[in-house]
Amino acid sequence: MWVDLFTNRFFWVPLFTGMFAQLLKFVLYAIRKRRVDFRWLITTGGMPSSHSASVMALSTLVGLQEGFRSPLFGVTLYFSVIVMYDAAGLRRAAGKQASVLNRIIEELAETHTISQEHLQERLMELLGHTPMEVLAGALLGIVIGVIFS
Image (cartoon, rainbow, N blue to C red; front, side, top):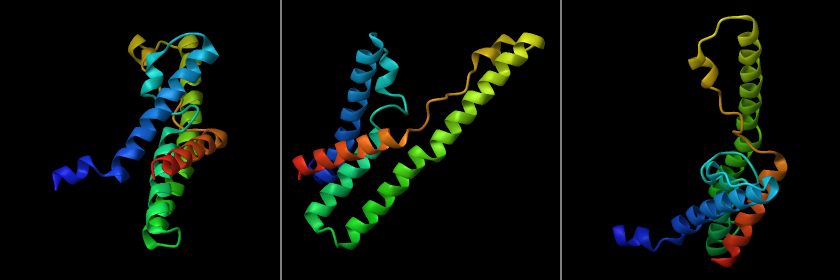
């Protein structure tokens, strides 16, 4: 049973696809900003979406193995769409709200007494993705899924 997990490409290919997308995100940031920031290896948001890449690699593998008309492909694709919608919709909106709240706290600090602890506890702003980042992740996942099918 445990041996099967180590040889299950439906688990490993999506996992490594997500890791590859994170590495690609790190490299693209380093090129664009001309500096290395290791946080990009584990952070959410940015180009490409590693979540989108992972779920689309899984959906592609399932579709190629089981058929694109199979119930299993339908289920994996449905959940892939939910993950990608969440990345571009809900998580992106939450990131925008965090940005506004951080600015409000900074402005309040100029006129009111706010503890240094509250000023240092900034909310994470880069939570979601633009539609282009989600699309790039999805395309990366499809390509990797085809390669490893």
